[in-house]
Amino acid sequence: MSRYFTVPVLRWLLFSLLLPGYLSVHAAEPLGLQQAVEEALASNPGLAAIESRAKALAAIPEQRGTLPDPRLNLNLLNVPLDSFSLTQEGMTQLQIGISQAVPFPGKLALQEAVAQQLAEAAGHEVEELRLALVRDVKVVWWNIFYLDRALDIISSNQMLLRQFVDVAQSKYSVGKGLQQDVLLAQLELSRLLDRKIALEGMRRNEAIRLNTLLDRPAERELLLPRQVDERPPTLRSERELVERARKLRPLLVARERMLEAARLRVDLAEKDYYPDFRLGAAWGVRGGENPDGSDRTDFGSLLFSMNLPIYSGSRQDRALDQRNSERLREQFALHELRLRVMEEIGRALSDYRRSSEQAVLFKSGIIPQASQTVASMLAGYQVNKVDFLNLVRSQITLYNYETQYWKALSESRQALARLVFAVGEEDIYEE
Image 1 (tube, one colour):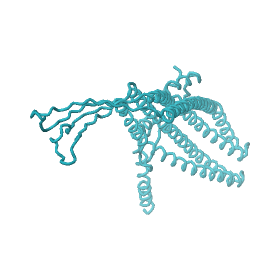
Image 2: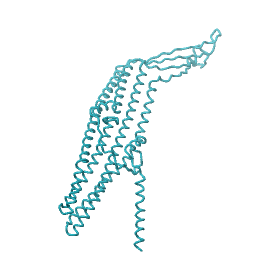
Image 3: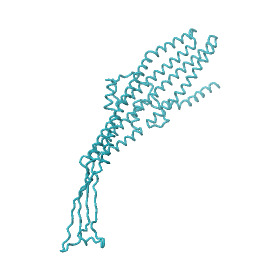
């Protein structure tokens, strides 16, 4: 009666303890790679900030190409200081006028063109940050995927080693095994536990990083799919990828826009050798009468002024030298960036080829052979033809190979993410 009562109670307690964890795991939907990318692009605050900056710069060109606001002038002219009368003297007048500053022809167009190039550069910088965000999301996602697979492998190896312990204990209990075999298996179990603790810590850190990129709470549970397409894609040639990057990489296009802006600034500096103008008109209202009794006629005035660029040696010449130096700086910066992009493409391609070849080798050759070795040694150990140490070593070797496979697969996909970023587009695959 006591046993009949106790077992259901224990089962109920165990179910109550496990149910919340079970529900939390199954309540979370697996986060696919494309879903993670789309969520990051929609909600990342850093991307939103630079998009706002680009919108602000896009509003500048029209402002720079517009004439300055005209001036309204109100003047009281030729007032006698003895009486302050507005009718005593014939030249006393209340003048109302308007004037307009007019830059030398071509300056406004150049100012607008400079601002337009800078605005376009800012737009391409947004695209560059977008690509960098996608790259970071993919790299972290694939790293988490690898850590999940490594933890799965550790769990399965823990189960196998526990079976090895049971076999070793059974043989030892009947005098056919050694106690050191049991201790060795227990030691390997402890090592696996240590590795599991380390991987779980790495997984938590990567999950926090991915949640941050997605603008999620850092502690939010993150569940990834268990299966992915493991087939390695075929890529375009390195030369073709470099050519596409020169045309499409937003960072290079932005720097080209900045170089063009620097060239236009040189033209604008040359225009500063020419004067700017101010045009205006005024109406002077007079009061009082002429000596013959007639009303005094109002005055009309036309105004024209211009600045005289007579200090060109210390101002315009120096400004032109400055703008030429800035143009050269942009040229060198663009050349350096092109070399850096070529290096990024080369390194990403090299990493992809290495890791994808390793993954294929592990998948098709090493792991099947290692699995057969473990099965053969396990059968030999059960009939005392293989010692326990070699059996454990073969299983640990298989564990390492399986872990290295998923690591190589993950690294190949991370290299693809870096390659897409380096080229500046997703279409890097051979048709």
